Length: 216
Image (cartoon, rainbow, N blue to C red; front, top):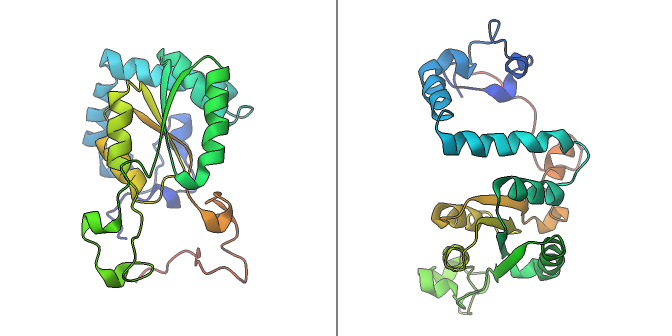
């Protein structure tokens, strides 16, 4: 990191929240990338983008009292989405069933597809034997590109990710034609609560160093 990089995570003021950036630090994007922000602001004049942004803003009224599942459904209703696509990890099949039930009980049309669709293995992507969990064995392979294609072909208006592995979620989002949101992420070590890694990073048993890096 350098003094010429945008570093909002180190800003103590966050004065942009109130709309005043007159005393912003030198690493603020308002100072380092004003033209970029100007161009982005102009995009909000596009009727479609503006409506999408409005539909997000509407959910703020309940953001502190509603959970993410509820907010996802509220956003879908704001957008007029009725057909929801669910892409989930096979290891979270129980959770996927519960989520499907909730969506359906709330009046949504749901299609769901697991990460194992297509029955791929690591051999299909040419993974070297030494990189397998057990060399010489068939190692199952997730198929996020396939999940995205199936949900798109199935008419998903909003695709919801549940527990896809790091990287698989990237591939899904990259290939999905439908807009994408996330309900939960994969983190077996922390009971799928990845933020716990941050909240416990100052613990004496943590393997993560969250102390501020010293400037060189």
